[in-house]
Amino acid sequence: VVGSVGTPVGTVEVQIRDLEGNVLPPGAEGEICIRGPNIMRGYLKAPEETRSVFWDDWFRSGDIGLMDEDGYLYIVDRLKDLIITGGENVYPREVEEALYSRPEVEECAVIGLPDKEWGERVVACIVPRKGQEIDPQALKAYLKARLSPFKVPKEFITMTSLPKSSTGKILKRELKRRLTEGLPSRQPECEGVDRGARS
Image (cartoon, rainbow, N blue to C red; front, side, top):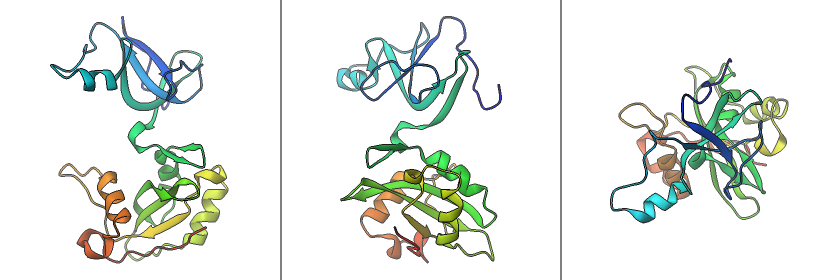
């Protein structure tokens, strides 16, 4: 099935659970939990860490996903990247995929920043393609036509580059730290920051 990572193999079992550990029905998004003889039993001499990644004997993967009626598993995003704004869950990957469909977007990262009213606000950090400019209002209108209103970023930040690991992975925690602490203007990776539109 297109977009699916397949079905559980052999004796491996998979459940989708909400943040309280309740098992969710097919089609509902939640944390992917795994059980089977090939799954670790815990961390050596680290009981607290072990408890944090298990519900009973189910291993918490840290991935958000869903299973359809036929048992096919789909990975949606990483739990640590989940943004909760106004009580609604926003998965950054969905917003990023919509942004990547725009010709002016070279790279992007969607993160949640602290907000007094919403708890977190959705923020899009964008590196434009060479010779292109980012128009926050145009992007906002584009996303509003494709996403639920609460998923549309309240802020668009134009950047010259995004912080990355040695393997090229975008470091969202570092990006969030810089923006939260007001560091972008002092960091070479964040030169040319343009806060764009807010709402």
